[in-house]
Length: 436
Image 1: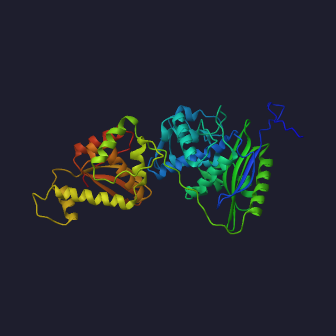
Image 2: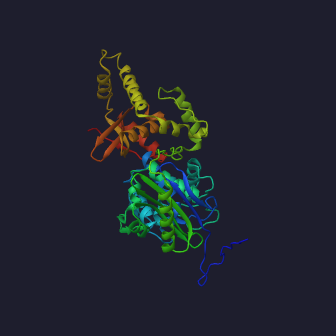
Image 3: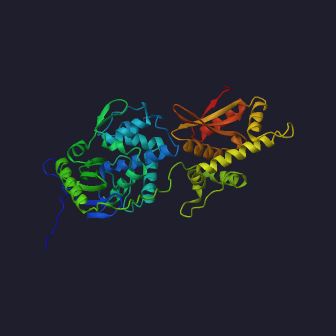
């Protein structure tokens, strides 16, 4: 009988050996090719930032924030220990650079700033991380912070982190190239990839994330592609960067050896959206108004709490539904003036209403987005949240060289100012648009 003792005493003389765990999967199918202690809860260290980045990508997709949004750095974020970008309290930096710093340099200050920008505080962001982890099926993970520095109860497993790595690859492929960059601009400086040794040494490697603390040891979730085959290997508890990388290379080799040459691609399902929740005190008023409107009905999802109804409706509305709502708004606008003018085609009715409405040449802008779909979705969500001042306005998406502008038009200057003030009180970005 062999008894294994984990070395528990760490100090300047004795090297701390964290518990070892590993997992290898065929990324295309999700099939497990190798596992050892894969469900043992261990310290994930900076593998945590994979979840922080996943939520950041999700937030951009759903219109919570733009990549160009300037984020103000808090004292809390600036005070995080290394590894860090070197952000200063009060400094403003584009959200895209925080993403790059967290993904490539594994910067703790950038990770905390991402969490605070999206949820207002690190604690609130940790709660969102845990909701998202549950939605992804990461059943043995508990997050307490956005960066992964050791904290009581902040734990995960090799299986859960492998699952998260697979979701990063398939759910947000447009951002996945970040993890293979040897270096990148993070706004205030160029940062080097903490995983560049493996990226340079292993053929086909293109990510994903390293992690190290004394409690965790040297961790890594790595992905590599060769031909039509792709494998993810995860290691917890490596004794050094070199030994960890050697073990990961060994596991990737094992994965490519065991993975079939041809296998049907089975992408993981996208989880339910966990962000953008309205204040609980506002939910009843908004939900009641929705029942009386002509906008698309909420699509029931029994697994979600009631207070997410507005968010789920916005997240699930497809482009055809939004166009239908816009057409209905145009028809309603025309009906308001039919008693004064002869009937004209719907397009002419809308123009007539705006041009003869006594100064309704103003509007408001609620953001710029990467796609028309995202802009239309945010317009609908905003209209549902602030019906009293936006009712009767025309929702319009304007494409320009910088993206898709989400606008509400057909307002007086007074009503536009009032709507913007009310939206800002709800923490929704807004600016008025004057005539012309």
